Length: 338
Ligand code: ADP
Ligand code: MG
Image (cartoon, rainbow, N blue to C red):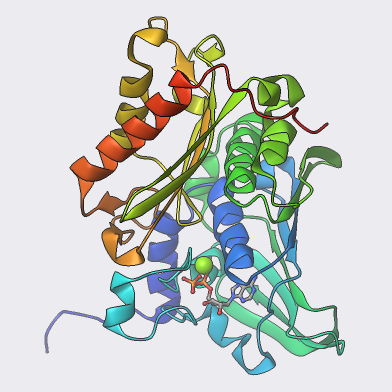
C-alpha cells in the first residue's frame, strides 16, 4: 500500500481558503466581484466588527438558479469558464470557482438567491464546508450572501487578524476602488451601521470619484483619454499641484478589474516627470480597455496582478495620454457634481 492520500473536498477547501481568504477584505472582494459579474446595478455591503462577525453583500444581479445553489459552493465550480480556450480571453472578474467553497470552509454562510422577480428562490446554509440547510425562499431577484464568524474554525488565522480599524480600512479601500472601476453600479458600504460610501451608479466616473475623495478633489481633476489600435484609455488625473504623499490615490482599472501595476504606475509618474515635487504622487483613476487575449489575469489567486502581452507599447501609450492631458492643463473639465 502506498502512502499517498487524495485529500477530501472539505480539507482541500480549507487549504485553498488559506490562499483565497486572507482576511475579511478578501471575502468582500470575492463577493462583490461575483455581484459585478452577475450584472448587478446595485450592490449593498454591510460589515460588522471589521468583517469578523459579518460580511453581507446583497445584489440585484442575475441570481443563482435553484439547481445551482449547492453547486456554486463546490470546488472549481464556475459558470464563467468552460473550456481551456476561455482561459485566454477572460471577460469576467472571477473564473477560478474557488471563492465560495473557500469562504464556506472557514465561516458560516447563508446564501439566498433568485433569478427573477417571481419570488421563488432558494436559501442555502453552509458552515465550515458542511451544508446545513437548503430550502425554498421568497426573495427578490439577485443574491444575498451573509458570511458570519469568519475563521471561527481556524483559530490560528483568527489570531493573526489586526484591529477592527485595520480590517475595515482594507475593506473600504477595496470597495472604493471597485466603485471607481464601476461608476455604473450604485454601491453602499456600511460598517457597524455607519455609511462609509455611497455612489449613485449613474455611470459618471467623476461623480464616483467625488463620493470617494470629496468634491474638492474631484474639481481639481483633468480628463484623460486616448485611443490606440490595441487599447482605449479614459479617466481623470490630478493637476500637478494636487498631490499626495503616497501612491494610494492611484487606481488602475483594466477591463473592469482593479489591478496593481508597476509598469503603468511608472508610465504615469514618467509623464508627470518634473511636474511632481519629490516624493509626491498624483491622484489618478484610469480605465484601460483591451482585448482579453492581451492580458493574463491568471497570475495570482487574488487576480490583482496581471501580465500584459505588449508591455512596452502599453507603457508608451499610457505615458503619452497622461502627458497630453497635463499639457492641456488649462482645459478644466466641467464642475464636479455634488
Ligand atoms: P467564480 O466567480 O470564479 O466563478 P465563485 O466561487 O466565486 O467562482 O462562484 C461560483 C459561481 O456561483 C459563479 O460562477 C456564479 O455562477 C455563482 N455566483 C456566485 N455569486 C453570485 C452572485 N452574486 N450572483 C450570481 N451568481 C453568483
Ligand atoms: Mg467569484
